[in-house]
Each structure stands twice: as structure tokens, then as C-alpha cells.
Length: 275
Length: 275
Image (cartoon, rainbow over all chains, first blue to last red; front, side):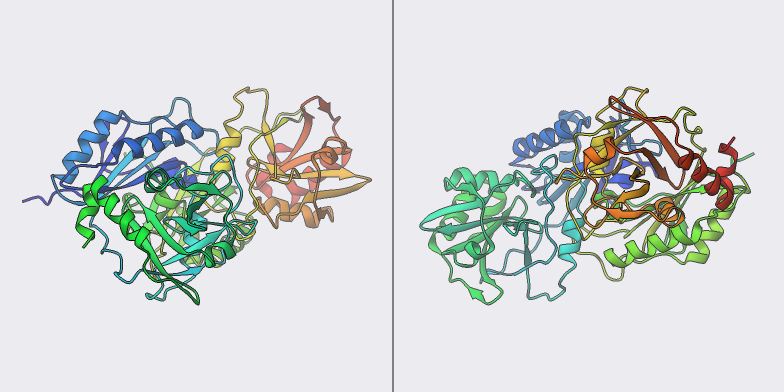
């Protein structure tokens, strides 16, 4: 019996065996991606993921495959199961040189991955990363494939006791974790960094913004450290309470636990992680 | 008869048919590249290209393949001919997530391309690009595969009468063209932008810096426009005299013509383009 595939690759609407060696994703990181939590074969946040992908495609003037075909192939790949589904869309093949080919035929790759382990019950331990996020309004907010800053930041530590690293902008403001967005409770109100200069506008972040009526603002590193509570979030792992940031420690906060329950009600994939 | 390959792909020291779909080059632009001018099967600037690649690998903590094997395969691919040889080295396969695998097995791709047409005899016509280069000292100078800024900048025009676009930093200083470095003659001395915040430290730029005893300095956009002469350079196209930048026009400058002759003497691949 042939094992079920865990990866499907397409050029335009046609299935292929491998991305081309001249793929602009490989050459320049000229692409976008989405990482989604699947629940019983469904993708509860699909509309939000596709909308962000479409905003990125618009900004990069990158053609997208047909949404219906991507959903259909995603369902086939998930085969009714739970897991993580990653979608990469690149500008496809191209000759040497930065000039985007017109028209371009996108390459898209769907891959299925196991669910990550549930977050540690006691909360995450964080560190500050030295690698800063550059100011680039033309790319800010997009989940594009130019991720060397995150790779460098995540490469700064290998202590398994540290779960994530917080990144600052070149100006010194707190922006996000390497793979999650950041929320801090101050004076009884939730704040999350503005992403008009750098950072990725997460799908779970958008849900939280609405859910807790958070305010987008510049957030100094010291304002994170002196917050009443801090959590991270992303569309694969949900709400991740933070217990430590360097020497600073936080006790579990009832508002964070409540938000986890609300997320579980809103997105069934996260229901299993709430006790 | 099987046509000679124009692309060779390796994982570590082993030839493979295609890059993996989980290649970190494709996922994150987690790699480096070099583009070299080949002359009769040789790569006259090989040591400089390899040295820059090694500097990049050091900064990204990315393993390189064995230099001797890369040179040997490059020679095989070039088969004694002229052309352009591109080498891409990525961190290789990896699971989902930014954490660099350790140890990593690099993917490397060698591809042969035709020589570009010689530069227009009357000099290049340039424009200013709107897309700015972000300040990122951790990546400045490296020829890495996160090139969305250049892709966006090169996508700003499709007028074939415009040959290249100049890019500014977010601070507004002139830095480079989308695919070439920049030199400007002011008060009888050559200057080229410092690349400690953004930009790629070109191999031809390094040769020119030495050849004309140029000074690395911040260079305002207005200082380019009011220069006595301007040229671009890269390791594939050599010295490219600039004739126009928007409304500004320059006559051919004897120092630029002299530099082209010196380059032709130093690197035989450029000899054919000097009349």
C-alpha cells in the first residue's frame, strides 16, 4: 500500500512532483505562507488565513491559485484528521534576475504536519532575542517567506527550558516572538504591538484583538516586563500564557485562562487543550 | 543524445534530482547565493566569490559544501564555455519552525545561464525606486536569499528604456541598484555607499574600491544626482557607465572608460566588451 502523501505540490492548477530549481521561492524567498490548525479535517479559520494570504499577494503582486482548488486539495490531504496544514505560495519559476515574470504561474505546496505538543501547563519561559526586526513598511504585517531575521533569532538559544524569544524592532520596541504575537496587560487593558513597520499580523492575534478589545500601540521592552500579565498567540498553538521572561515571573492570570476558554469555544481545534 | 544539464542539485555531497519541499531555502529564504561570470570554463573571481559566501555562511551559521567539490562540479557544468554560473546554498531540509536544524546538511544548486547582452554603448538609464532598503546590520553586505525588497523595487517599472533602479535606505541615502553596486565621482574622488546597514557587498565593488581607491561613505540621493560621473558594477556585467538618472544626464567620462579597460585586463571575461 502506498502511504498517504503528506505533501502536495502544484504549479498553477497542475500537480507536479517537485518545485523547480528556478523557483523564485527558493531563489529570493519570493512567496507567502500560512500555517493553519486543522480539526477533524476542517480548517475553522480558513477565511482569515485566505484573507491574509490575499492581502500579501496584493502587496507583492503575486498571483494566487484558485481558492476552491486549494481547499479541496487541503481537505484531501487532511483526510478528516487533526494536525497542522502549511500552505506556501511562491511566484513560481523565473529566470535569473529580480524582475517578476508577468504573467507568473504560482507554485503552491500543501503539507500536513503533526500537532505540536500542548503548551506547558505552567506557562512559557521567554527570553529577549538580540536579533532585531528591521523597519520595512512595504512588508510589515505580511507572512512572506523572507524569514532570516526569525531564523537568526531562533538560532540564538538551544536551551529547551526556553520556549520562545521576544523580538524588538531596531528602535527597541517589543514586536512579537519569533513565531507568535504578543499581548500585555497594563492598567487593566490589553495591548499588542502595532505592526506597521515590522512583524506578522497573526490570524489568532486578529481574533484576540476583537475578543479582548485590545489596543494596538508601541510597546516598550520595559512595558512588557512590568505588565500585569503577558501571553503569546498563534493560529497553531492558540493562547500561550507566559510564566517567565528572563528574571521576571508571572502567576497564572484569570483573564488569560478565560481567553483560552473563549478561544476553545470559537475554534474547536483548541478545545482539547483546555482542562 | 541527452542534452547537457544546465542545473545540478546536491544535498551535502550527494547529487539529487530536486530540492526537497521542506527545503529551508524555499520556506524562509534561508540561504546564500553567488552569481559569477565564467570565461572559457573558468571563474576568474572564484576566490572572492567563495570568500563572500564563507562570510555569509559564518554570519548565518550555515554549513557550506566542500569548496573543491563545488569547483569541480562547476567546471563540469561550464564545459569550457562562457556564461553565468549561479550557486545557491541553502540550510537544507528541516521541519516546520524557524529553529535551524543542527547539524544541517546544505542543499546546493549550480546553474548555468547565458551571458547577458553587453551594456548599452551610450550608458545606462536609471530611475529612483520607491521601495526602500530596511536597516538590518545582521544581514547587511551578505548575498542572502531574502530578496523581496529587490523584487518589489524591480517590479516598479517595466519600461525597457530604463535599465536599472537605484535604491535608498529608509534613511534616504543612496545604497545600490537592484542588482548592482553604485559609484559616484565627486570632487575628483570616487565614493560608494557604506554597506553596514543594508545592501550587498559586491565582488566587483571590492575590485573597484581597490582599483580607484574609492571611499566608502554615506551618499545622499542629491549627491548622486550632482556627481561628476556615476557607474554601476556587478560581477556578471562589470562596469556599467550611467548616462541618465531621471532628468539628469551625464556624458561619457574618461575615468570610467579607463576603469573598464583595467577591469578587462584583470578579468578576461570582460575583455570582449571593451572596444
